[in-house]
Length: 189
Image 1 (tube, helix red, strand yellow):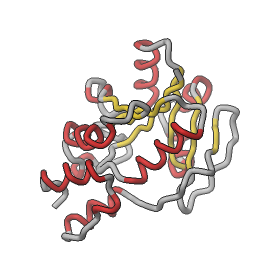
Image 2 (tube, helix red, strand yellow):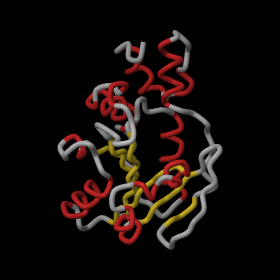
Image 3 (cartoon, one colour):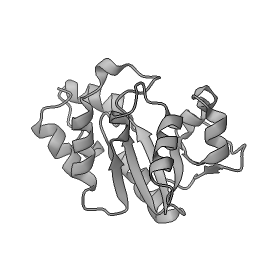
């Protein structure tokens, strides 16, 4: 099975995440998309993160009825900060029957050379890159697949968090079940 790993803090999970993953699982050669919730991105400040288990529940509430979308909390149990290469090696060893790929935005591709052991990732795993506003993606390696047809949505989790804190209605930016969970728990207010 070809599994696309969509890494992120998902703070919060929003329609951009769902649209990208749904598009890729339907219109690429990936059989399943798995959201890998990162407890701590080495490039981000941890203090603004909602608890990892709540971020997991928000995603789970939204995707539980879709067999083509899944989640992984594997990074909750690996050393922190989380490095993609460590997670990929761990998952490949535990599930050798799967072929893993990474899903990332063009903004992350720009800084990919800063990732731990990025050459090893590039040599052993495919990377599916979706467009991001203001970033030009160029396929410079046989394992990089530019997916330019993905619907473009300029939505950021930081914008959503700030808007909720200001009391703005952003329910249209978050999938319905995920929004219900966030709203009922009074997150980001």
